[in-house]
Image 1 (tube, helix red, strand yellow):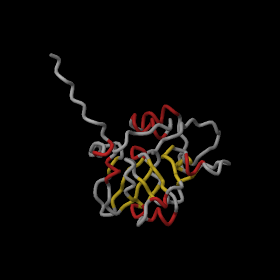
Image 2: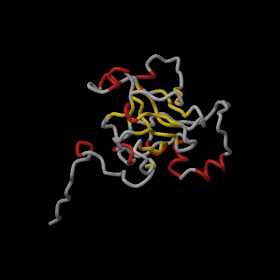
Image 3: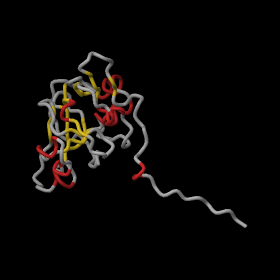
Length: 183
């Protein structure tokens, strides 16, 4: 799962890119603002970036800093884009609780603008055959917080743009209940 914990900026950390709340609201879509600035999360399987598999780089929708190489992306089947390892412009929160990484995850932020990206979990070993099995980490990222820039020079793909919402997998659907006719 991604976006398990609530995100409220309590620290006074400064970042290379600083904007007022009003400026962030102006440059980001409502969905991007909710995630990057308020720590929200998107519905699973709703971002087109969950399905993106071309070579390229995923950048921050707030400040355009490079976040993840497509070579570290894998299909975790969680409904959110997942990566085995980030680029240096991603920071991970710290916790004194040794179980936090496994149970609740640690927060991922853009080191350039401080935007909330998602969470990192210590369950990478559960994904054999992927780079996550080697790193022992799954970086679960809200697709709406990113933009994909393909290596071939094609059009950028916004994480909150069209092409997502392919629906949840069949195994996640609830049972089909048909009402009985009354006699």
